[in-house]
Image 1 (tube, rainbow, N blue to C red):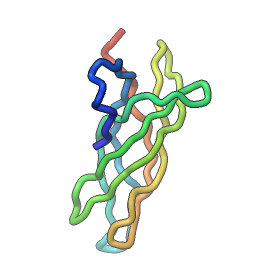
Image 2 (cartoon, one colour):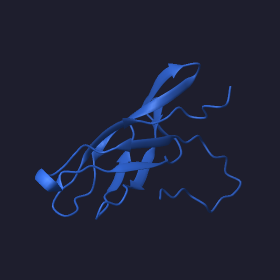
Image 3 (cartoon, one colour):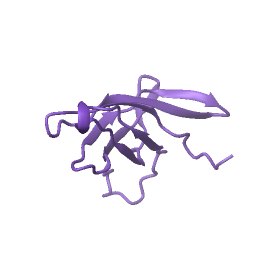
Length: 113
């Protein structure tokens, strides 16, 4: 769902990250539930000596869905020149509730040595 600038096919793309996770539970009783989500981040955006990524996706559908639209935290080194990003936030409000989420992106280019 995240759209990058597609008007310049010669522009070199910066790296992206895969992500997946589950929201925290919301509502009570028989309505208590959570959602799952997955996707690919937008390209790297330089910021304060590091970089961040935009994430825009929808959760799975359980009688309804929520949207997630958030900016990651800065890069967190994990060794061997690789990094991840912490992501926290809340979904859109649907049917009078929203869900909190917290997750880390996956390592960029994990199969590249």
